[in-house]
Length: 465
Image (tube, rainbow, N blue to C red; front, side):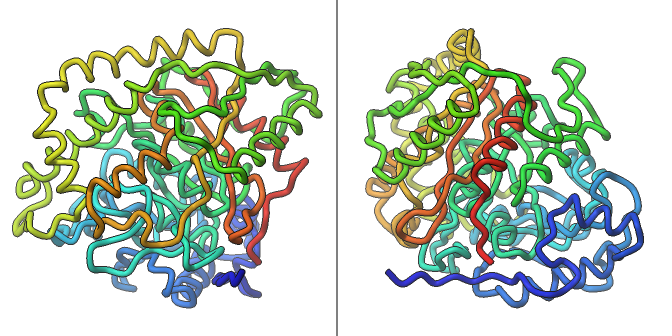
């Protein structure tokens, strides 16, 4: 099978270093923030074919030379649904052109407190609704491991940039799997934090059920751990236990649940199932107890989440002119957004019951986790597909069926508010990575990071270079 890889790793200031190493170089004077920013900008140009960058500011506006924060001087990208002063936010949509933000968004203030240098905005599908970063007319965002394949979504641009070596870590957010899905597709670490772990963005604060968490995708566990600690340096939720800086595996022996059945009964493909089973065996080798555990929700959860998803599409369409500014051309919304909107209109009378059930998932999930320190499962039901399989240009019915057969594990943790992490677990025959998922108790990010460190040490993550 022919595999078309594309990356930008080379002998420049960035090398193959992760963010923690680069920040140390900046602190010691071995490298400067400006040198790292220039190297990352050059690398982005080398892999422009990936279609991962949504926007870059004029050169004179590029911030460089940050001196504060755990990750000061490390180059990065912000996802294109999060405002930063001087750049537009287009939310991946072809229906409007985003206005240049006059100030940083609420969450952006926390993100930039890490000291990272934001070089631009990363690409995403329209409003983050799709699980592949593809568009009606524009070029898709490609997977560096195999450019014929999807890199996932909605943080697809971020994952493509990090996997290709442009930057060591990049901002991502997750409303149904949008950190963990692209991390799995691109061979990265992707932690979705607990609800309330970070400062919520403007949209998350007004949701009937807040399903959005902020984070990063990275190539190493220690970069994700350092980022979590950097966020706590700026603000820490007093209602959650602090994570602190997790620096390696723990000696604790844990009880870990194992889930291999999807909520809607979709079968997991053989390669994904093998990756999860081999991870379970490895965890047992490390002294943990792994046992089959039931799902805390039934098939109705998938229908309820799909209706909630559709409600968000209806709101985005109905309020577009107000939220994003004129001109907002509804005729240019993609097929998924339009189909979801119509699905909501047809089924709006079911929304009160769906909301009631979704709001009850947090307590149901917490009860199911009693006695478990973590739960192991797939991230996705099958290996990331070729581009076109999830394109918004196809019929809504076909696309929705394919999405529901693919994204069957991650939405639970958005509704429950629990943390989840995607960790690389090898390569599929198609040359693309496979990820496995670990979820935990609310506030249990430290345990997930410790387990991720252990898996990274025992089974080093694949390297594209």
